[in-house]
Amino acid sequence: MSGAQATFLTGSLTRHIITMSLTSVVGFLALFVVDLVDMLFISMLGVDELAAAVGFAGTLLFLTTSISIGMGIAGGALVAQALGADQAERARELLTHVLVVGVVFAIGFAALIYANLGGLTALIGATGETQRLAVSYLQILIPTMPILLIGIVGSAALRGHGAAKLSMIVTLVAGVVNAVLDPIFIFALDMGLDGAAWASVLSRFAVAGTALWFIVTRYGGLAALSARAVARDLRIIAAIAVPAMLANIAAPIGSAYVTAAAAQFGENAVAGMAVIGRLTPIAFALIFAMSGSIGPIIGQNFGAGRHDRVRVAFNASMVLIVLYVIPVVAVLFVLRGPIADLFSLSGTARDLVYLFSGPLSLAWIFNGVIFIGNATYNNLGRPMYSTWVNWGRNTLGTVPFVWAGAAYWGAEGVLIGQMAGGVFAALISFLMAERLMKAAEAAQIPDLQSHAFKGHSRAFSITHLRR
Image 1 (cartoon, helix red, strand yellow):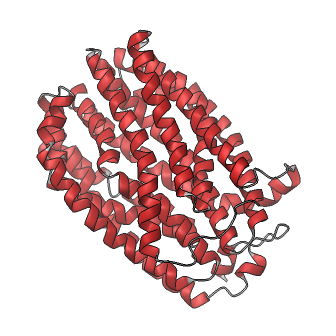
Image 2 (cartoon, rainbow, N blue to C red; image 1 turned 90 degrees about the vertical axis):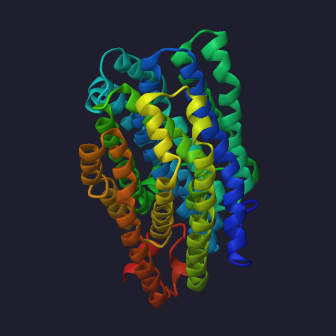
């Protein structure tokens, strides 16, 4: 397999984390900034219902994206662990099978969502013209879920190889395509909200095409397709993908509840939450990038039995989160006025952005702990841990807090409750990660390299860890 090697088994782990995260964050920012510009362009159309429609649609798109990311987690983890175990050809085969299984699943899931768009948008509070606009937007984007999944899995596989720059280019291409086409479709062709959707469609094709191009030209492409081999690996893939997808679904479910809670205070509140939803990944992009970057580092070292380096990588990530979040919150506080002015926000929407752009955002330290914890579970053979943590965070860590906040402080209480619930989930996540790393160190897994990733073996590191 051309260019395949485990790059994280030597050298400074802190340097690896920073390098991977900084290169990844460039790509993430490209996508997130375009998403924010989307919202800015849409607000410039002067139709009040449009921003709220994007907010409602975004909740369902979050669900489909989360499913794709779950499959990407499986692809990235399996590739990284296989390379760490010096099984380059097995890494190529596993990636191929993840893509096949993922695309088949995405086709079915997208069809189910598409057939129920009316009921789903109503369930999260969309009504009237706002609902019609949200459904129209989603009808364009939902069918391209399989394309999005290919791009996400391909990008995750590149990170699994340690190819942070190539993964960055993949997302950069998507951002550039979207940024160029947005104003053309929305304004020049007078397509409005539908224009933003079609620009995103072409952007998804760009992501998938670029990711596959790098996999083919740099890492030997995909393995020969065999139905028997796919069936053989289905259990291995599901062992990570199903818990990861279940874990990722929790976030949009929690977000849907938050959106519905905000909707009771009017579309202005939903619009404010929609702006915050797009501002968040830009402000805290490095945390999103770090959560995707730490996985391959942990996965390769776990695959090689280097448990000491797994722990060092985890601890370094915790320190970097704190060092990043504090200055970002200070910048948000200083810029809270210009941010609200940029989107011509007033009333409740402006109040929400002001509230977010202050000390409340320090709670993102705890969200970062959850993200790193999830990456650790997925790459140490306990993906169900991330499922439990994420569902706990988005049910017991969201519903009662948001409900109480809304009852006492109205729309602002919805945001306060959403952020507060993460503190308890982060503490549990941290303790679970510590316990898992100790268990991995005690097990030592001496036969990982000789059994876990052989082309015709059914063994998998999760099995060895549990023994």
